[in-house]
Length: 490
Image (cartoon, rainbow, N blue to C red; front, side):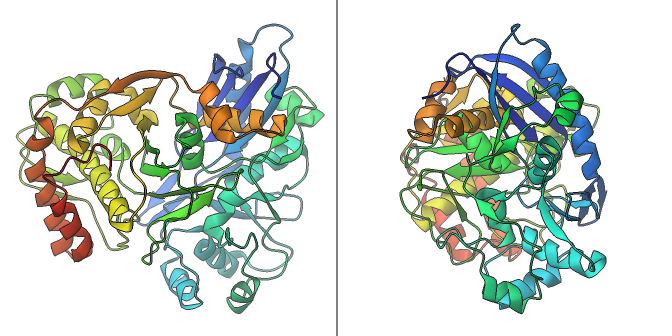
């Protein structure tokens, strides 16, 4: 049974900040904190200094705990990170390389080698980046470390096993619950490089006295294995029953669903995480998202621009808003670049095109999932930073032609708080715990007739992606076939 009187900490290592929530077992947020992160981009390369994650956590955790009721016991914590972000450390967990971020595309050649070895990976996945890092920093005692593992090392005082969720993009076989040792040996992965793996929710240790001094988190607080940020947001949405889906709109767009069986994708675009209770969490991560807005309009007032964008439905332009080269979902195209068809009338029209372009990408993701036979008949939930915009939520519901739930709290950190409570309870289903903590703020229904308004620009974008050779023709045809259908429950 979960401790009803305790608070639960969720830690989210995002792209632009570290966020921490302190939550009760029934979903009341007692405290929150955040601290910014910066990175370095150079073409397909995207790095961060891993030491800054710890410094940001120390700031964010003290802010979250600063408003806690006196004497509140922290029952546990869990940490999520960006999927596929890795670095090399020594045996004690000290960084030996920069962190290659989730969308870093420098390991294209290594990814081709991995696929030749029979492992289905994308160019930005962690295993190809591990091979690239070995080539640059090889020698001596090395350990491949996922983003949350570095923070857990600092919290507990020793390097932990990785959770199976973060290990997925490093090549971990979730069906067999093991590393594919023969294939990895053939690729030259040395013994000892990859960590042991445990299921999410497994107890990893306790917060040390030194970490307590730095973070304000009480010494002895249990630390539980987390999941990726996309899975964390899915837990925070409560979308864990088969057929349910969560769309996480942050810097990028991630769709995660729940299914009784894995969704098989020969192209390797959709992959399957595994929940602690053994059910499957299929989904994929696109490279489009709210990052396109900050890239084009770094000093904009989002609410003000949203209000002006409402005059352009649809926009005079059609956008596929990639910030950097390469797309991963709903198609795999390392050579893909952002595109804008047509000429926006003004800045507000371009803003509208970017908002709508993300919605079109989201619709294409759902069309692709339907093409693969994924169950889509459950509720859809919007989370992530983009879900803070009421206008964008309504626009996305209109484009998708289906209602969407928006929880009161849309942060992946809430999912980690729920996972920590689940790990501490030792019983029940994760879905039950998540539904206790998730409070739905509103349900956004598509406005009558608005979905049809966006059908033509969506079809134009689908054709443009197909004509460039990025989107497979059968997928484009399937998207066209669903244009005039009621897709609200599929």
